Length: 308
Image (cartoon, rainbow, N blue to C red):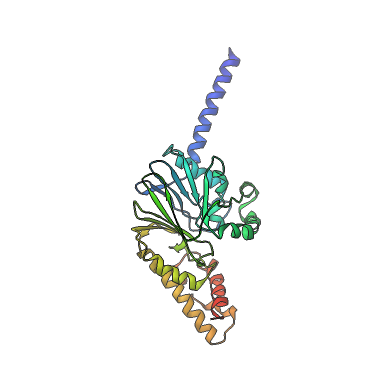
């Protein structure tokens, strides 16, 4: 009898522990519009301490299915996002949409790799994953540690967007658009037509200094075209959910300043090292993580502009 009581007590404790763990693993999300949920990432670099949870990620619930938009900077964060979805709906997850190749947006993909879910991305995303994926994993192993990185698996999309594509979640249509080289060469935006919510990925930054990993000219062109999209609000890749197109103002100013400063330096014959220290210096006080990214943005801009 004592043995049976002990076993029963152990089972109860295990169940309580499992429920508690599941609750702890749920990612904090906000419903920013009916059926549209967003987790706002920290404005920080990816580290072991924050688990890579620095990007905005989320999901949209239709009448018959769910679409996930980006999965976070670790499989641990991806599982937390999955727990958040499951606590809000039992509808099947039909799509995982990756806005681009950067690790903070898709290192959580493996949490969704089972169960017949279709992964969706820009037509260039498979190539970008093949080219950069191993480098990203090796690089972030140093800052995030073995425990988090050992779980990461690169999951390429099987449904590719060449220009635009519509996905039906049941009385809810998402319009996906593939962009020419801008923030990266594989940027994808998602517009929920029902609520006018635009998931802009890293084509839009607020608070966090914008990052250039594609084409400065392409970004400036994309900003103009983005502003014409019929959205009411935008979920940037980093920063707070904001009204549209007002969310573009700070980023536009930053990249126009960067381009103007670099062109001036090139015209004066100053070297690329000067761009790293001088270009867009007037923007420093306006952005978080400025010193972590601006020099790299400036040298990329210089390399592009000197051939104009």
